[in-house]
Image 1 (cartoon, rainbow, N blue to C red):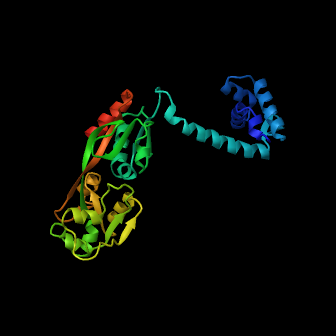
Image 2 (cartoon, rainbow, N blue to C red):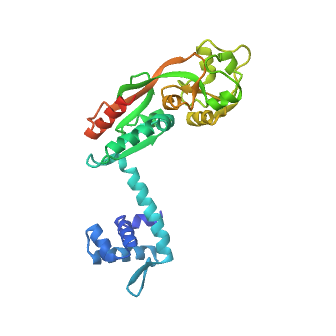
Amino acid sequence: MEHRLLDRIPLEAFRVFDAASRHMNFSRAGRELNITQAAVSRRIKTLEDHLGSPLFSRRGKNLELTPQGERLFQRVRASLDYLEESLEPFRGATGQAISIAASGSVSHLWLGTRLREFGKENPGISIRLLTSDSPSELASENNDLVILYSTGDHPRWHLTPLMAEELAPVASPDYLASRWLDAETLTPQAFAALDLIDYDRFNANWISFQQWFERTGAAPRGSRLRPRYTFSTYVMAVDAALRGDGVALGSLGLLREHIDNGRLVVLGSKTLATGYGYYLGLPRNRPSRDEVLRLHAALGKST
């Protein structure tokens, strides 16, 4: 069986080649890697022999990459960058960024501004945010903190409530004004005929407009609702409502800032408490670092 070329090349040679390519100087590359200039030169020569092609050329005192060397450097640098990112969850505690996971809607509508404020008050703490709508990715134990859509119980995470989920239709003031509508007196039957904005339900427990009307007892008579717009994410549905495209189903806790500043208005008086909510989680099976507990406390106070 023919062996791959990579099987015959020591992986250390690529690290040496990367350092030499960045510094364009074998001595400086050696100092970075804590080896001698001669050792760098030998490893580069070994790599060139395996590849059958020169990687560097000299023009006077200056070192340059050959065209083959330039192409290899781009690939090696990209591979090392990718490997560095992949190892982030396994770093030791000292100097490690806090990793927090949340859905796209929570990250965009609620968490982002709070992380920014925490960062201003704690400039020495780095934060890594994982955004995903996959429950299994969010609940990965590689994360330091997680915000889960839940009823409050999880086998691997100790959950603290951030906000209970309460759903109501919302629209922009401009959308209502353009149709001469009064948000306070608008009935479910009336806004069911407006431009409803819905979203795809990737979680069986999420509520769409059809379920909202049925569970509030306000389902209009006749055929099933046909939203004017359906988006692949909840964030896109909210953005459409903010633009004045129609009526979205608002998760009032997530949209509190938009409602308080008048960018969105709640329609009518019917709301639906789903029994679910958003919970901030600490891992049950390992102790949390002080900076993680500090962020946990800050997020808990901001609800």
